[in-house]
Image (cartoon, rainbow, N blue to C red; front, top):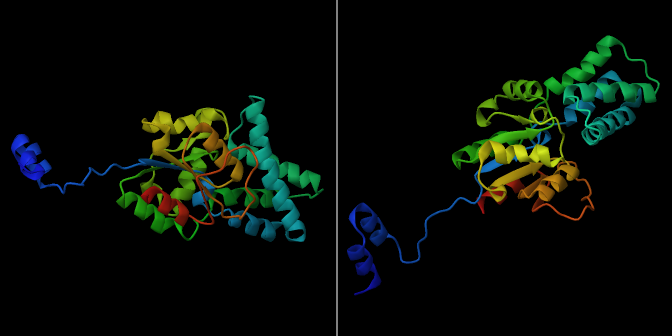
Length: 252
């Protein structure tokens, strides 16, 4: 008896009929990745911050923007190391005040408000809407795993009409520890279950890509700034200048 006939005879009920109709070399489709967790700036276009700085502080915009951004993330790491958590909105405000004081710039309340408000008015990167639609068609769950507060994520998602694509936000406010703390990355496992290797982390910063790899996530570094790879003992699975590398990675 050939193998195809054997399958038809051996199978019982509907299961046997399905097995007998499969090609001999067929195997059930297994989805390798079930979830993608995103850093906020993979989705939201941070160039808008620089543009706002140019409008408000035109005389020293590049210097101011760089100092503000650098202190912003340094404060997250220092506060996590020192166990003195303060949410990202207030950390951003603290870094703004530091940058202004460091450069001896006297900002009016209106100028400070305009600078801070950009974090509630971020557009999405141009390649984001199509990618999100692709992931939804593939049945992949999407969530932010981000330093940004829930309000920042909600407001920017709603304004860009993408909120429907995402599961409840995994903001570091939940665990009172910023990335790259393992406590932050653990939120993905706790929220979605399964194994770490079923959850892809899409990172914006090289240090975030490193933290995700240390934790054990398959990691795509969406390196929109064309930054140098960190020398911290691990490398992302994929480095891409835009979100297309992530789209290709989850399809494999």
